[in-house]
Length: 304
Image (cartoon, rainbow, N blue to C red; front, side):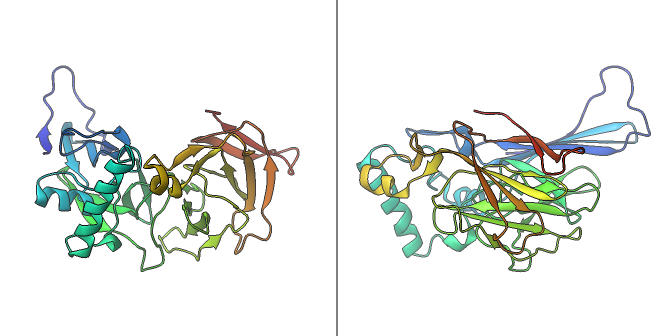
């Protein structure tokens, strides 16, 4: 279930001064889907790294040992529900939900340990590497001196971070601070927060003016502001109960909005919302204040 080996040098040489690690994250299901739908977003997180040092390269691929991964490893089959492929008609979703609920009731599962797969992104802040997935807390990982990857555990930052965090935090290269958020299917639908350079988390800032749940996957940070896009892709948990369908819905009646909040805000009193019809983004590219007109923010984002 993992790879750890020294890379064979086919031709040429690696400069002895080159010393570091390239590491990336991605989904890789530990069990092949058997008679059930599978979406690649739900694959277990696996880290792949190449460590280069003293003219040698070491390859390593290891799973992030999340609660989901270790629990399913013990049982020998996948059973955690997925928001993307677990809803296939009312009967099927009801049966799967019933099985999952029975495992919680009998003590086989503890929902407080989270259901995330840590497969979306990696972030380095507070002198730690974190494997991230937006439906769970970050998992801290480390690299050993010989290039191996270890999972240190799920992190709540001294009980200051609850439920989940975006997989796309923004790190200020000048201050070392990290800015992040989480979205939710229940109020508050959006919560903003940030960390000091040493990883100390500041209090949450609930965005109460978000009137409905929205899948906000990414955001942007400038020197002065945090920028969010409230898109038309929304969450409707009731749909799962009434139809057994996916809770992810594209709402044609909703007008997307851009929200601009001072990046050190302690509440949402200064947020400003701007209607942007037809503007739906999943990822941001960059954002900054215009040097000549400080009242103008330039956003670089791809409309999906």
